[in-house]
Image (tube, rainbow, N blue to C red; front, top):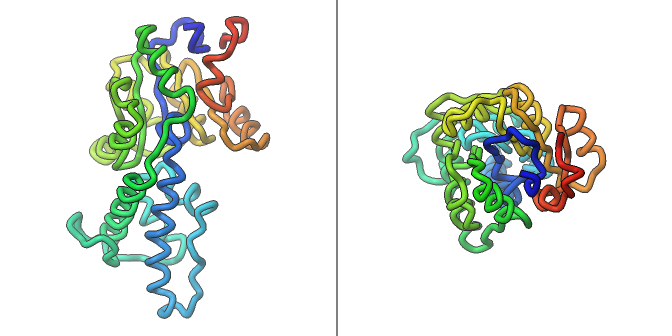
Length: 258
């Protein structure tokens, strides 16, 4: 347990995939940029260029990150005052429906994943291996429909016991962060009480969800190099904020969480 930088009594770990284990957010943002760039460009003539273009630095974290694809499409379109028919799952990628845009994003993302690939952050595999050796069960949470593919591409899938993925979120009507629904679903799948696991989250909403769920330890992952973000994670209730899992591995026993 000391090698994991966790206190005694933690019997499970729950990881947000993007931003904690894998650097997939950049690929998702790029896929959404292409998808909405195409869509807004086609509508430019109708609006005489009055629609603001998609900005991955603001639109992705505000409207799309952590949301299932369909919800993300609706939320972004609403930010531009656009409402489209829902469509059906079989809509052609790029069709002017919610389902069509979601399918286009999935198509673009799969292509980027094939051509660009995706990598696990330094320390992710080692941390999961140490957890496995210590008898700590591990769960992942991802709103991405490609979450399983991402874990498989990085080789982390073999070290994960249970997953809360896009299908789980839709099937169980799980609310997004800061609601604790997804974390509690992970606990149910793991068969553990919420008061025992440690949760690892990169954003303030995830930290709030961990606190609302009553988790034993809430760890903030800050890869931004901005002191303000680390401060925000602590203010929301993170027990500790580190730049990555490798930092927890390198903590001395004296710096183990209380």
